[in-house]
Image (cartoon, rainbow, N blue to C red; front, side, top):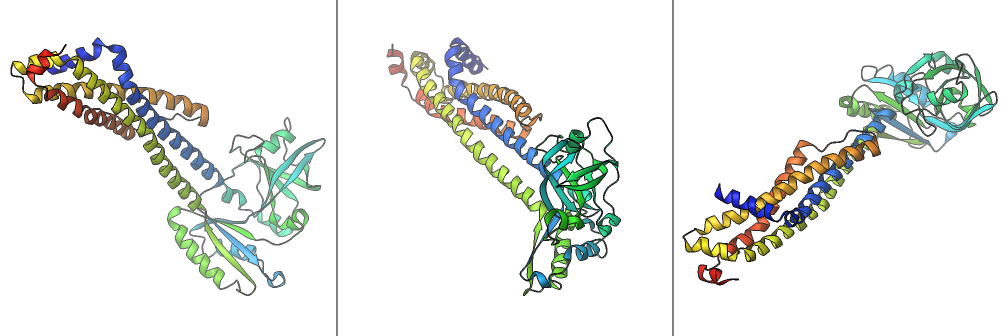
Length: 393
């Protein structure tokens, strides 16, 4: 207890110097917490983006060498997915798109993403119907010129009226608006709500081609992804002649998994870089403790002359180094929480706070750094000879 009191007295006696000594630790801990929190925020942002696109999807890409011998794989995949695989598959849709102006009266929305899909397009792409109806199987069969608008397009073209039943021009062709999707991405011009969905069978009019080279299969859960991909692989192998064309299967969850892995690695790297500041702070503590040893040489000499053991001298200086690093760590944690909260709201619109684990880890690391770098000054103090120490000015 006496050593603790003396250590606190030494720290409070020179408040400015003590704060500057802790500054490296404060900066290091703050940097670690803020960087890790920002990476976490970016990772959450990317995960939300992939979830908006829709998860648990398998994309089938088809390439035909001889188009005269190609087959309508989109219709066959639709039947297979909704038939034999219906227990594991929620929907199947061609994945065709283009950008065209959508016009109503004198108002036009340029460069609208127009998606050509099946009646299960919305389910596969995570759109939810707000009003009207969605594309129906009969629309696909009859090549009906109907469309469902994204919330942004509907708001711009029909700010004060109900768009259902109105006719818009998409790429110069008339399309009857039968439904509107709920806003899912902010409803801005550059968002996923700047879109319109139409039956894929009108592709000859909009795309000048009736080929379907990409099909999305929506799986009911992540645990069935491998099974569905295996079954699709076998099914396609029996229907796509290698001399006529080829196919590839892509796991839609792999991009999100890779993004999470990259963010985890980046978090570790950035945390390691920020930890260098902690090492610099440790060096600062060692430097100040060496100065303290010099300043308190006579005090050390008196203690040793009256029989104070080496461990007491070592303990006193290690305790002082530990207190400095601990206080720096706590201040760094407080500052890290504050900055993470501010930057998280400003950059991602999220409440980002460092995790308990990383906070405790940063504090423990700062404490260890202080003690480790305080060992040399403490040992140097304990090795002073009483006679020499008492002679010091």
